[in-house]
Length: 220
Ligand SMILES: O=C(O)CCC(=O)C(=O)O
Ligand SMILES: [Fe+2]
Image: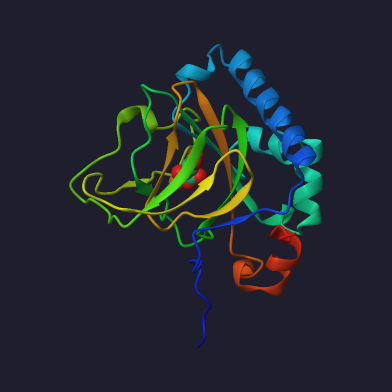
């Protein structure tokens, strides 16, 4: 049987989101995080570096899905029903996110729809020619805050690896999460990126015409 790959052949593609939509979604996601912190008596700095909300297992997921602009663009891209998790990647100079892959579950597409949330200017997502490092574990601050956080990134070799590509994290992109990658900032401020993940129930949309037509930004 012919099965299409769930791993894209590319590292990133600009997402079909206008600057205005990106800004509105930024405000919605920041508002969500602030409210979550208030309700849980915590602050952004105490959240796990990889802070996920997962469909069916988390009552906050519903709120995220129904943020007005986010909901509108996911509907326009015809992927609202396939959304399975919304993660926040929260880093600063003390919370560094090592090179990793997010290849943890074949139920998931190996792409993320990444949307900048806070201080993403001056930061990139960078890919490396690294490989998983079976003998090493992620720092403990990466871990979960939600009771249901399932995704655990696999740490890769950090040293003597070459950069193979990068994209501006201040713009929304589809990113390949099965090739070793990490956020990189040229500043020390708290920086938050959102990564939306989708299941494979619909089809392998990354290989389809629909993906290029609805989800990827047309080059001018
Ligand atoms: O925040 C970034 O630049 C990349 C985050 C990341 O590892 C991911 O979205 O899977
Ligand atoms: Fe990742």
